[in-house]
Length: 323
Image (cartoon, rainbow, N blue to C red):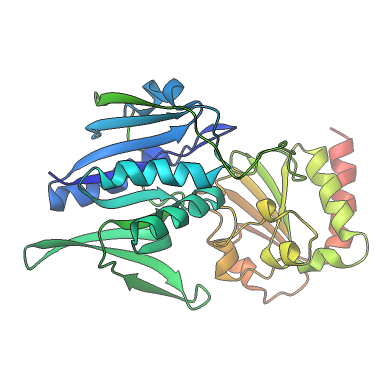
């Protein structure tokens, strides 16, 4: 029987929490195709995540213990994963739409001569002429519309943006297989990891202060960053801020950046194009500051402040000092 493979990404911060969401997406496809679901992880620490990958609906878990090889060494990881895929009858590979995962899966796609669709929002499997086609729904035309993509090759490689599906519960009883991969060498040498300049882990942050082009004026940027530090919030920005090197690329919010699920988000000087707002999921409290009363961000925000941030941020800092 053919399989759907869910790639479980492991980073220096642990297992990607989107893995459980990908399993739910795989279950939706399996309802139509009748296939089994296999979770596959490849990392120097892969065996330690055996219990975390016992997700409901998963038949098998394959842990590739790549001794001495970690997440950044995608030249080696892509080869060992591609070898496993070719030894199984795999129809679809699902992976998180995260920068490092996409880099890895792109290499795998080349090795397998497979089609790949990135940053999908939804999967719609359909039986057509005795075959199952997985339609992939994603944004296009600058996120102004949705398109449906079909991959005609096998396997089809698909990355999904966070929040697309509910997380599968950790109640499964899959068969676990640990495969030792020793004596591996990579052309990529990891010298060190450097903490991002953004305040805290953006993916897990409960509070986020985000700035747009309006923060370039005067002391706006430093004021916003100071306020984020004062309230222990992650500091992020829109794509123009990353393009102009005001923030790290990893701190960019949006479809082409990081998708966040905070409890509260203060957005300063961001116009509010859909490319940006698609990067904020869940149901956070959103407060927007913009001096343009017609800014699209006000249609997204819960609270709207029509003002220049240079007049508001000092007041917020003073209020934070009093607590």
